[in-house]
Length: 298
Ligand code: G3P
Ligand code: CA
Image (tube, rainbow, N blue to C red):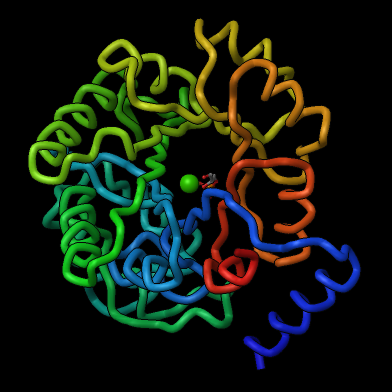
């Protein structure tokens, strides 16, 4: 049913625009394929690869024993998490399960897949835990090699909130340093550099990372209407990518980014119609929870 709806939409788009719909853009699987499998888990990343993404997007937090863990929140989100005793994490208690105060081993006692996700009714529930970044990248690289697929890129988000440094998040300097060291180790095995983007809403982690490496692309994540120049002034350099919440995108924004030498990659777009609209404005990539839907555009 879903597939035929997608096909119908595509045909309609072609008929309406009378244009070639095959596009060249960076298709990014948001938290893997969150619409289909539990977010930010290895099965979700593999699913995104099966649907032909160019790039896997995921989020990073830090454990007490300074392991880099893939997770959107630095705690166990009540919508998806199950405690070690098998009961659901409640909204009231979720922040008590603070990953920055837990060892990696402790985090592995929580399930984040078996309950599904109420916001994504088509997501297939399965047992899952939050993976280490290193384990996820190893699994992805090995899967692609085994299947003879081209290696994917990684859009790696450092989750970081200034008011909560030291409480839920590491200080940017430490975060950048540990991430850089981990990526260097992985690079030795998988030749990763050249296919990594570091993205953040917090300019501070980008600035700290840039001090360590000025070759890896960076994306400034944006959810407000502050001007590009303000962000650039705060960073002290122009990032390679401007990554706004998709409703903020206008043709003028794409033009300005282009003049400044930045690509535009908006988030998180989950309908084919909106993907098409964004591509018509000239964006360079699409970040989506539904890489299966996006695949029909190219
Ligand atoms: O890649 C950008 C996007 O992931 C930012 O939003 O909240 O899903 O991490 P969020
Ligand atoms: Ca993200």
